Length: 308
Image (cartoon, rainbow, N blue to C red; front, top):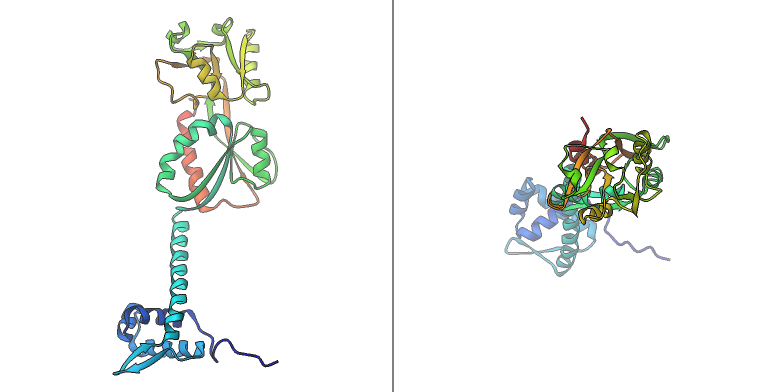
């Protein structure tokens, strides 16, 4: 079988393609040289090499000027696509370098993921239109598993995780707050003690919620029996019941922030009952530049809840 050559004797290179594209756009060897910052003879040499690489005639001479052939115009259409793709790569590279482009997945405890994180991250994301974010709401034990399996980039949990594949950093320690209906008698106090809640209808989180053990321990230490009336899966759901006057609850300070003061009141709880938010990342895969910037933004957003 005879081997048919698809290109000429020389292999084309990107500089030849750039020279051809510049000439086809400007219609002049001189102007193409000015665009590329090279001399006219250098452009002519590149065009000659490109024609040899193609294996057919790209130009005819007319009145001392180069005139593209029909074949040259066919090639030019494909070169235009290549140049556009190259420019797209340059834009993406610049966006990645400036941490404006990428894909980041966050798994966070429901108390953060349901309302606070969307609210806190919106200003950042409004400036990063090419950043694709996936936000998952997961229980803390599941968050650790997802980070370990490298299925998410960033985990925000209230439980630490000791594993060689996971890096755990406590980013903020917050005090739980007592949430009350705005017109509740205890709303007039500067602080609310666990003893004050002895006979109150309590809106409790589910038994498998990681904060429940901490809350129950605070009641047990003061010898107070907690009177659970309603059990709910999420902190924001508990806020809704409290705002509607059904009972009281103990919740993180970053929930229920959208309720007006004439519906919901929050007071410091005594004794102070603290919990940590842990930032979990994979120790086997470095964070992208975009994820690194997002981590710093999250730290800044959560620092307001640091206890004193």
